[in-house]
Length: 90
Image 1 (cartoon, rainbow, N blue to C red):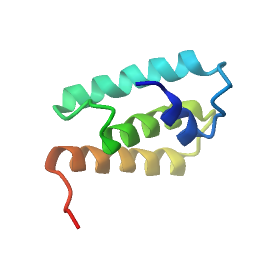
Image 2: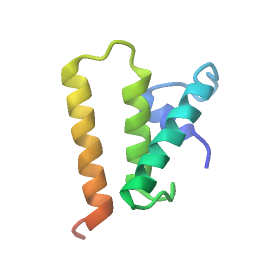
Image 3: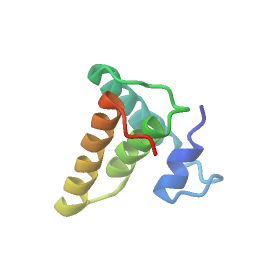
Image 4: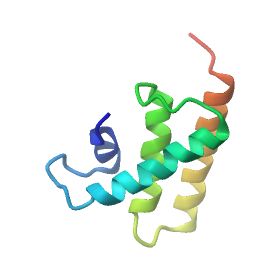
């Protein structure tokens, strides 16, 4: 799967390629973390895409505030829980 969903989430235009290497490195790290957690790494899964994109966004921001980092890390934890235990259907 391509990285367009990550770029969109991070607010990077598709035709900007200067960050592609950094995005790929961060994406690999995010997928590795999901594997260690024993959850899905299928990027067609919305939650997997959300985890990967959030992980990348944290690392793309230069000098992030502690509030930003804490809220994004809480989001990552919530996504792992949802990937592990599922979510209620409506």
